[in-house]
Length: 270
Image (cartoon, rainbow, N blue to C red; front, side, top):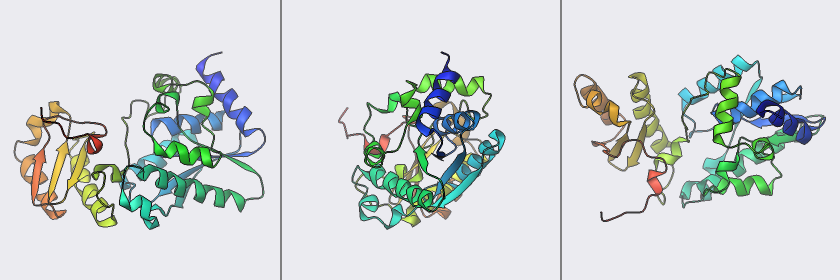
C-alpha cells in the first residue's frame, strides 16, 4: 500500500461516517491530514485556531493553502491567554494551548447535528520529543491519522510533493509565544512586539527567521547565508527602526543562525 492509500485508509477508519474536524494551521503536517481527509470523501471541516499567538501572515497563508485544496476553513477563537498556566510559560505552555484549542473544537462539534472526530497533524517523529500538547490530545480522544498510518516527517513531505501542495517544503512555523523564554510571562503586548519585527523580516524576504524576545533586546535568528544582507544598509537601518518601533532598545544578531527550541536551551559555558 502506498503512502496515499495508507493515510486515506487511516482517515476512513477513524472517521467512519462522522464529520472530521481537522485542527489546521497551514503547516505541512495538518495540511496533509486535511488534504487526505478531503480526498477520502469524508465530510471535512478545517478549523483554524485564532489568538494573539498566531501571526497574521500565517493566518492568511493557511486560508490560501486550504483554498488550493478546495477545503472549507472555519476560524475559531481560542482562549489560551485566559489560562494562568499558559501565560506562566513554565515549559508546559503547549499543554494549555492545545487544551484550549481542543476544548473549543469539542464545544463547536457538540453544537452540530452529527457526531465528529477531531484530527491533528502529529506524526511518529513527534512522539519522542517533549511535546506537552500530546498529553492534551490523549486526554480528549483526539486522533492523529499520520501516526495511525505510520508516517514520519519524510513521509509527510513526500506525499505533499506527490499531491503538489504549495507548502510541501514549508519549514516549521511555531507560534509566536515560542519566541519568549521559558519562565517569562506570555502577554499579548509581547506577542505583538515579536510579530512586528518578524513582519519586517518577511517583507524583505529574510525568512525563515525568529525574533526572540529578551525584554529590551530582540535577538534575531536568521539563516547564516542572509547575514551579509541584513547587516548592510539600507536593510540594516530599516530593520533597526522596525525593532525600535516595536519597543526594543537593542537588536542582536545570533551568530548561531536559525535554531529550533533555542528558548529552552540550557546555558553552557563553552
